[in-house]
Length: 338
Image (cartoon, rainbow, N blue to C red; front, side, top):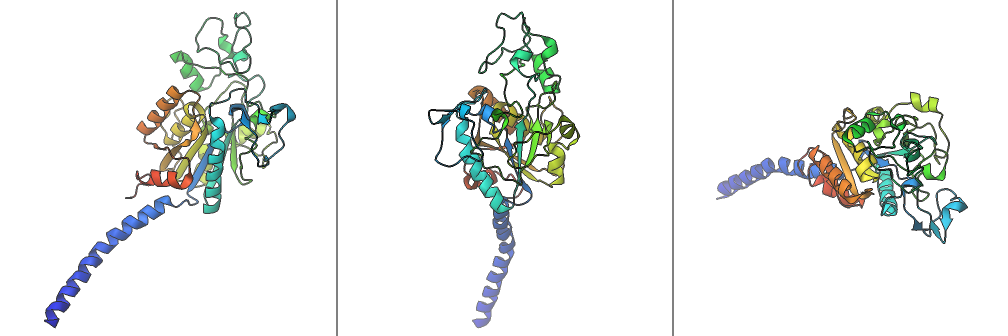
């Protein structure tokens, strides 16, 4: 009986041992996916004053002084191209910054950085004979082509050209003019000094929604100095910076979902036919954190989210980092079994 019992026990141990490696692999993969490491990068897109709505001043001190002309009745005035509910993303992005900073993840951010007579501005693409004349801040020009618009004033980048051919080109109110309050990060966005910043739209005749069209800024915290055009023209782009940092997983958020956030996400996936950019080498997973982004328009925002999902991107709705990362990993974003 002892011999039989010992044989049975040995058999059970062998069975458990055989099962143990797969179980450990599954648990280990799940834990590995939810861990933020140096192979993860946060991409904060255009969370700038020109894009943020009016909101009451919070109790916490700003990261830099707010000009008196931007305050009114205890609130910050809206930006020239304020996105609805845009002020809601700042606290959520700050939570992601804290999580990445404490976990060893890398942080990247983009700034729209325009000259005063940039090709994307309404008044620079509108002929003087147009009955509408100069479009005041807050107005968005109708889509081109349309009588009264000066074709020589539109941007020459591939996205603007494609939009023009489709009859969907949009020109905007003056926004994010470099050296102004509108071009700076929200004063309540806690961007770390170690953040890698790219600036985009600095070329007079070229626009870019995607942060991949930007180049590395030489400025450092508090990110309020002006790069020269010569500096920006010779600095590496976002794709090269991500490759050099050996980023494998990119978490994208900011403003606005249907334009700059969406364009950045599609370029990261190598799925933007209007730019033709390839995905950065080594980048395996691209996650759109929809809970920390807002669209200019609900319909176009939803269309962009669907396009990103169809292109292989992962979309998560949770704004809080731990919950969002778990949500992403439940869908197998890292290519491991979870």
